[in-house]
Image (tube, rainbow, N blue to C red; front, side):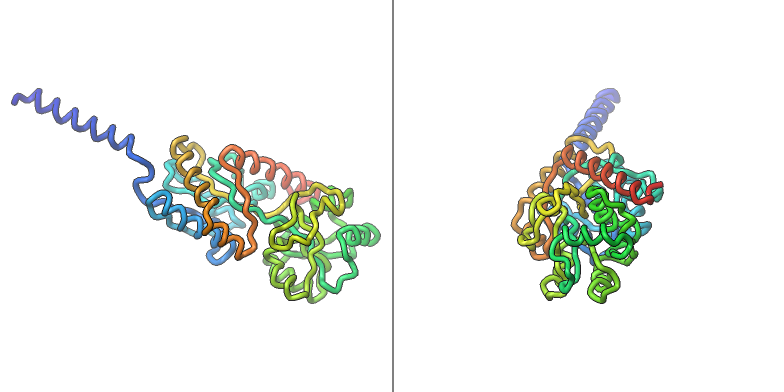
Length: 322
C-alpha cells in the first residue's frame, strides 16, 4: 500500500469521526442546573425535583448547583455567561425582571433562551385573623381614608411582594406610598410581624402563609390571579372583588444561555414538558402548595417580557427604578 493510499484512509477516518461527533445525540454527558438562590428554599426544592425527573428523560445526570448572592444576580449571571451548548441550564426566577430596573445588573430576560415556565405563585393579601377587614374592599377603603396608617411587609424593599401591593394600589388609583413598606428577610418574618401587630398587611403567596392561615392566625382576603388558588379555593380573586386586573407573583422557569442551538432547545423543552406533565412533579408541587403553570419556549419568552414590563412600571411608580 503506497503512502497516498494510507493518507487517504486516515483522512477518511478522521472525517467520519468528526461527522459522527457532530451528529451525536444530545446529551452525551452530565448537565448542570444552576439555581440562583440558596439550598433549602422553594426554588432549590423545585429545581431538584425537576433535575431528578429530567435525568430520566435525558438519560444523563442533572446536577443542581446553587450560586446564590447579589439578590439573585450571581446565579442569573452564571447561567447567562455559560456556553450555549445545552450542558448548563438554570432556573430563572421573577427577579430577572426586577434586578436591572434597580441598577443591580444589565441582565434581563432577553439574555436567555427560554425553555419552559413551570411555576407561578400569585400574591395574596393577608391580614390578621382578628382584623376588622373582611374583604379587600374593606381594607382598600380604610387605606384611602387613612393614608400612611397601614404598614405592610413580607420581603426586602423593592422585592416581589412589595411590588405586588404597590401594583395593586396603583391599579386602584391609590398612591402606593400611602402604605409604608417595612423591609423584612422574607415572608415568614413579615407574617410573624403581622401576627404580633407590627404591620397590618402581608402581600405574600398563599403557600408561604399556609401554616398561619390553617392555624387561624391569618386571613387571606384575595389572590392576585385570574383563578382562585387550588390551595385555598375559597379565597376570591382580586379582580372578582375590586375589579383590579393586577396579576403579580413569584414565578420559576428553566432557561439556557442565549444562542442555544434549536435542536438542543427543542430536546430540553420536550423533556421538561414530560417532567411538568408527570404525576411525580404535580404531586410534589401540590404537597407544598406551589402553583403549576406551563408556557413553552416562545410563550415563556413573552411571559418574561410582560413580567419585566409590568414590574418596571410598578418600580417606577414607587420610585425604586434607577
